Length: 220
Image (cartoon, one colour):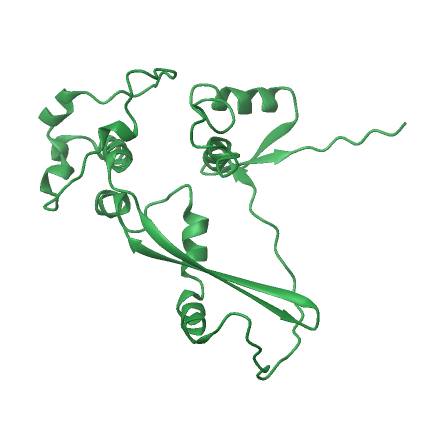
């Protein structure tokens, strides 16, 4: 397998995802030891991609945490509050081995968040180092610009499943056994039911399908 040529230490924290006392889901793919006997280079290209994806996701789930620092600035000018945020990845953790297997441009459920992290971070952190909380600062070359905002992208099935898994994550206490909407075994079925009864429609091309929500307005 490709992972055999990875020369760095691979951390394994099995308890992050394995707990025999809490068997609540069933999975379509179960890793088995005989995968080590597979000659990766002799597999068809399609199977190589699938095996690489499974390997990356499985080892990433068992790996070290990815650590990032967040900076948030808030200014008040003419009774209007302006906010800016920056996120810097300090320790790659599980992302290091995922990038090695899948490539640094591998698609992730949080790819949009990754792009946001890289936008203007250096400038914002440089300003933050020179600022003092509660102090007033003069405006420099203020100007008013007009523009148009763009709506957020529609959910795909992958991003919708990820959102369902993370729903309410920040509001729930740590001792809650199950978080999010549904389970890994029922979330896809929930989406299918919404499509079947007409609340959601799939639109797009063969490569990417978006989920379009229909709003029904009734008048009494």
